[in-house]
Length: 192
Length: 415
Image (cartoon, rainbow over all chains, first blue to last red; front, side, top):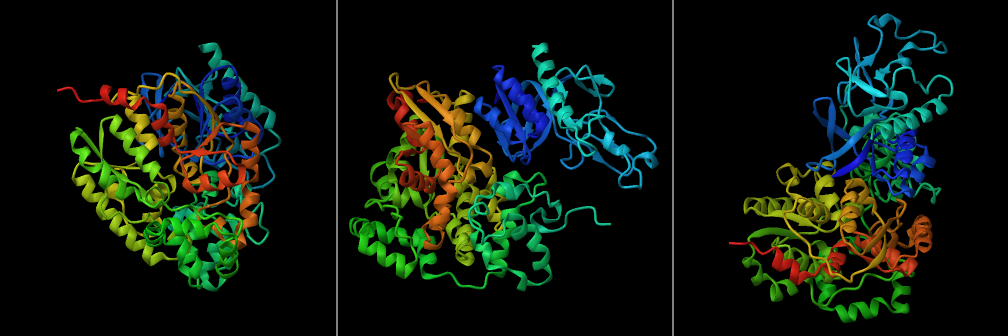
């Protein structure tokens, strides 16, 4: 099944990006493993005619060089979803957008490059209220595109908390997260 | 430190985020229900200690599975609740529950006496007696029974024509198409035949069991499940994929057999196809070619039933319907209609059932479509009763919108 843009993740960043793109006339699908409480962008996206795959999960994707061509999901089985561009808005640890092991932090879907400290002892401060370094970790990007093996992918745009440096759990990052969704949408439109 | 989930239904993955509570249609309308988080994973921690912590209020869960769709951690919240009802529910099903749930025992009887059954079940005094004595709500009209079942019609009119096709599928019709609405089965045969598929019955198919599970008749449901899986295996062996029309039956066959009834379906799972997905794939890949009627036009709204939402296959219905040139289709916001199979027929649930459905009914009234597109039979009863807007199954819409004769000619195998 073909779309112009597929957004992976239905939180604030993903839905904001999807709504902006769908309203601009692009055919978008959002794959949301679990729902979020950000109803306003979701309703606007649906009202604009966007496709929401609620409760489904991306299991992997096929690359052609530096381009992501299609993703596979748990529920659609052998019907893959193809698109020209992909927004990765899978969030941080809670939603498994990035995953922490004892010695590394990684992005589980496509193995994108993740920014994190090599020395584990600096990951967290035992004082609960202190700023926590691990919350700053996330996927690396260049000009809005995700890095993989040190090079930017052609059409994968991370947005929201999956990105390094964006963190909603410390202070109010709502506007930063929303803006990163809009930035991803802008970058996709510019690239077309 | 325990790092991996070791309990059933991903119970240990619950992070208490409560998103399930925000989407539960019952919790919003019935204060007696503690909600999916507390009835499911929270309650399970206590029940694992001791079964006395089982609460009767779990019966208010209508098993719509919206909590599972909403869960970001993959917890099978509704399955936890159903499993607890199976494991700890102490009360035997009432006579009413047994009658409502035994679709394939009551069906043949009611069909045999259809005119009498339909007439008398519609009478106010009969409804009054059923309301008081059985607890079937008087506001409900029980589904009509057909005097000729789908199976009888098929054997008489269609079976011997199926050999002429080069491709063959097995049709799991379910109870509804057989006893209540044979027209759906006839439409299915017409559409499949036009696309060049011969249709075969699954001789001896049993009810999927969903109503029995909901009403605590687990042994009967398990027996039916075993029979069905065996029959599906035979069909696969004979080279015929199994095509289903009911979303609830499909969810039960695919999901509830292994999780709730512990009937393994690994060997047949990938061979069971919901008709909308099956046909979308066949048309999109060019394997079959539709010829649409030139003057067919409709303005419709799609209601995605809860169990379709859980299956995650509603996208195929939308895309399939959008293939029809004259179709102007909007998608209704995803809300439960409130009937939940036998749930809404019970007197104690009627008010809640209608309150749950209200946002959907309001949406339908605002959209004012010529008809609602919906794959689910019980949603159809509820929406038609509550809004007066007719509800059509996608298969029946195809049967109407396709130029069946021209489609059949185009899809005839060339030798």
